[in-house]
Length: 503
Image (cartoon, rainbow, N blue to C red; front, side, top):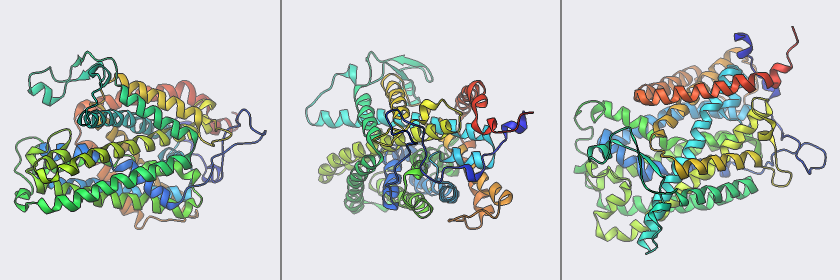
């Protein structure tokens, strides 16, 4: 039984060419993905996935509650963990240009059961992150419309239930950890943005990538304006002390810097989504490493620069709001014009995050269905649009329902946990494959692979270790649900296992 669970999929069996399930209405042949993307598209996809909630929400709260001005170091630590994982992703993506991302890489190195675990963890990352960001998009959009004199009914702008946070509990509004009713019906703006982005993902990767590139250009321009004009108001005294004294637990001090790193890691979630587009890249052996590492490098620089400007403009203690960038700008009336642009940039930034998440998840389902671990329904490719259209519809519907009716605040750290575990597994897989199959052709090779891989595993699991017990419990429950599905369906229908000789 254990040996069957650890069966690996040969590298030669991985999809190096277009592949897909037969589609009704086709010409009788296999319909596969369309290879149209370049390195430029991939870098833009990475920027679209990563530059979003991290800048416009998480930076301020992590600085105010945990790291202080040293939030810059928190981004460096989180970026280091991602860089180690990114190098390992680049080697795998160039060698195995499959749409399954970390799932496909684990299947080739560590076995089917661990591959399922990683794939299920990626479901947690993409699906729940898309819902979370959609709720954030709704909040920014409602605020922006209010500033224009357009007021949406409160009953249509939030979920009917909410989760009591520490801040609300301290204000005496509710009991921490309890669910409370809001009196609302559902979050309509969140549903509408997921529906619009879902349609875009349905009709084609080229259209999605083009729309992403346009929106990314807008938000990067806004960020550059923020850096350029905000830097003029930086007071270096606001950076002192750089690492505030520890006030107990993970509130400031070096413990706060590390906890801040585990929090801002949520900002990096999505860079691995670049690898899910591997089967739609013209030259994956060359372009995948450029897309993954290039977008990661640029995002890290942008995050450090923005956190430096924000903590320099105002004392870090004032940034613990839902809109830290706007809070910093409000301190300077001369920058009032920039606040409106920042709100537009935030809406654009969160839109591209949703776009890349909804692009990535159906492609992971596609790879799992191709291997028989999920029903063939998820492996269908549209005859005209060449997208995993059925999986896209299912993912968009589930994400829309969660964004409409559920409080998503609790899931932020849990999403990060699933991603960190997947990253650590990829780092381990690269080292295993170097030992088991050293002669494989590797268009991109991780330098000092055993050092880089070990550092990646240690950094990712170290950040996981800083997370509270409640998140471990939620991750355990999620994993149990996943393996229940695997043993009731995937284990029996695995195509790789069906090819084994009968005893």
